[in-house]
Image: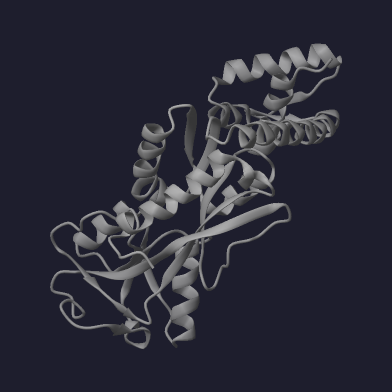
Length: 305
């Protein structure tokens, strides 16, 4: 009989793409995951992983077995949901993925409240880029995702995944102290021509929003510095190296030398919680979504709306 934990390890490698990433998602060491798959190979008398450069790749037989593992894990999840729903209290392990600024600005308070109110619930957070997280929940790699969508990049809604709105995160223009926009009212997008921009790399939603929006306003953005993390972008603005568009969630207090200026119209991103279809019957999912919504006004410093 096939061992479910070994199948879970194989499924994680198929979803995350490497033994190391699978181990991080499962809360194991890479060695433990490798051992689980080695045992599964002996159990099935089948080669499942082959060396490829410095990593590994799944064989055709492994991909077929990983698809079967996904179906079995879905059956187990439904059974666990039924049991937890019958008991009526959040419990067991809940794997949550959130994008960096939500992991920093929203999740600490949410996780602390869940731990205090529901000691039988073991919530595990992983920071994941938003363009990856929706696929992870759809494939069963995590139980709940906090992700965002923009006007130019709505949140994808794959089959079998449900979602609930958490709140809208406003974005501000950050400029160095002494900049021509500092201390004035809302700035129209048409006024941004010729500015030196600091933003995230191409392929990130903030970068794509900036480029597309300014082009629609009739100006080509002059991007001089790129960085992945918002705190780095803010530090570059503080050094007087350009201006940036930064969401409020997880931004923290602005350092000396940086001034917040509103844009007109003001950009915003929409935050959602996502889970697999039917999993909302699980009290752990329902309670986490409720707690996310309750903490949203505190995380953004805005009244509930």
